[in-house]
Image (cartoon, rainbow, N blue to C red; front, side, top):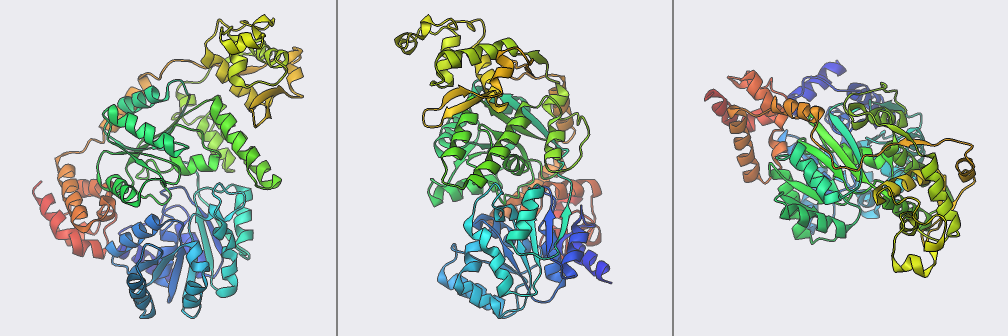
Length: 601
């Protein structure tokens, strides 16, 4: 009886014919009254796990969400399916807030979205504690954990809600949490006898590609032109200043790029976010604050111009590509300065040593992924505790397996130079000495008189940068002073310096990426999905409706629904209900208009 009713809600309201991953098990766990932790991949349908039980149960479901834009999208999406939901946050005027509360008190609302800061305030806490709350859902739950990759103080206080709402089950949801983080989420939220569901972390449609930074704008523009010339994408940068520079550079190169970061005015951010939501071909250059809760399904690439600080961050950000299941790319370049900069950020923070220790481990794991000579997908899956095949056939190391080289002698040259310069200089100076630079600084320090001066002039600067970065990653070299970024030797250095151990490293090719056979194959796969006339007509209608209603186009219908219409060619209301994502509400609102277009074909 329960299961048939749940399937009816899924189809009649949301237009889906079947549950995905562990959705049904998670929903049953909630309905049985258990605290539940759900780990599901980005785009895996986490919201269904609390929205369906919210409609099944009496009472109100509180959804704790980190971003205003995420709340707005979720509420708009629910209203399009005929479900009345509201959000309470700082974007509302006093009058709008009172109107939303009246709807809640009148029993017209099933889901209420609030921020962690809001629900913990005495005002909202008092408002909700006398209402019939049936479920509390905590989205982006990795923010709860002190080991998580996002620090948000009020997330870590959400366990206090257990006292305010005794007996109300919690569901915590995230796409990224290793075993330690999962345990910490349960601990912080005071969840008891928690049922934990971990779906696969694999995103088989995403192609992972990680390269050495040579000329980042040249590399980025060549990547986009070669693989995604007419696609929507996100480019991540570490700083606001770099976001602006990269967005401007892309525009000069003819790409439709816009910046997005917290330093822009609200008006500019809103305008650029609207472009991202509504335009067919747009590139957003952003800091990592952009993207949490972004639900656009047809982002074809995510590019990183700076190294993420953890695999969790990388997985979360790359997961914003290809949510519709179609071929997409996670592309990244990184270099020595990324390693030094992120390490310095860890060491100079005021956080406790226990946090720094975890942060170092996470950065080391991220670097190990970058330097991996085996399948990157397998490395990612194993990090999250999931076995993977030895090769996936769809990442750069599988497509073009790296060649290993004996780097022992060159590593000895670097270590000897660090030692001869008394372990008091940074990477740039060490490499200048090795390459025999005639700079004034070298002669001033009389380092041009050292025996190591010029011993590596036969190789380019990029080679020595890469080798030094790998030595740092492997702890054969360390940053001795974070203030001056000076390099020093470690206890492990002697193993290489004395020749006791051989050092085999990934051989780097210092040329820009070129279109190869696999890339041509990728383009062929994409060409199979070229939109025909009907698809374009349906898309035009969808976009027109979205503009009129001031909604992101994918909330009206996503591309998968449009492709399904092209495949099924429904002739009437009953057949239109068979389309993916079509429930009763969307049939009533849009069925006639879309059926009219389909009949023309």
